[in-house]
Image (tube, rainbow, N blue to C red; front, top):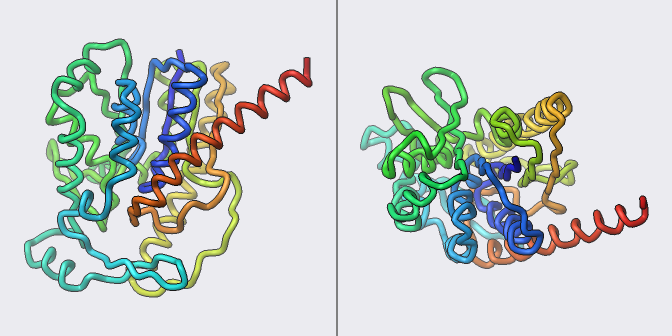
Amino acid sequence: MRALVISGGGSKGAFAGGVAQYLMEVKKHHYDLFLGTSTGSLLISHLALQKIQKIKDVYTSVDQNSIFSNCPFTIQKKHGVSNIGIAHWNVLKNFYRGSKTFGESHNLLKLIRDTITPEEFEILKHGPKDIIVTVSNLSLNQVEYKSINDFEYDDFCEWIWISCNYTPFMSLVRKEGCEYADGGLGSMVPIEEAIKRGAKVVDAIILHTETTHFNRMPSRNAFSLLTNMFAFMLDRIERQNIRIGKFVANNNDAIINFYYTPIVLTTNSLIFEKDKMTSWWESGFQYAETKSQQQSQLQIELE
């Protein structure tokens, strides 16, 4: 059994799409399990349907308005670098409405429903592949994995949306009596879950460099500080997930193939820019192609 696992990473999901496209269209890998966290959860349904061009069109055309129904920050460019500032009026408006978060992401839920049709959902649900998204249950303090086999269309679309909700900048969702947020808060790379479900080969796309290549710039405002803090915590969670995944793989005779980003794509994955995401998709495809060629050459040399 083979699994494709895609980590969280916001706009960097475009890179993961390019890698997945190469693995599925060129290498002809067939996956029984698709597991995703946050941006990974947006990709996996379309990948399982083999509708790669469709999800590529989505990832290379979205912008802030596609995600946020109330965007809590502004984007300021200086010397070619994008930084976020506080959209004070939008934040105050959200609090006035009784929201617990700075912004809202209901446009993302609409986008998910627009891009995954009920007919496509039924094809996946009654097909041989399992589609699993990661969510964080803040009320019960636990990570949960939601399989397409256990839900109907509207519920599963909501679980995908919940998996992507990077609180407190995006919506906090109350569902089934509990508060839920981004799956990355608990499991950025669900390798362990893939192996628990029977995978013997796991292709894991990690939307982060294998080693740290930069020092973060000083925080410019409260939002900048928050995003830096979350980036630090998610990086620690991700590395822990990978270590646990390797341990579980060793004890279950499973193989993990890692695909990291070769360079730092962005220091703020909440900024969605069409040109960059188009470039990242192509970079992901080329990176997977180069890595595959290197692996083939190494195998020839060993023989």
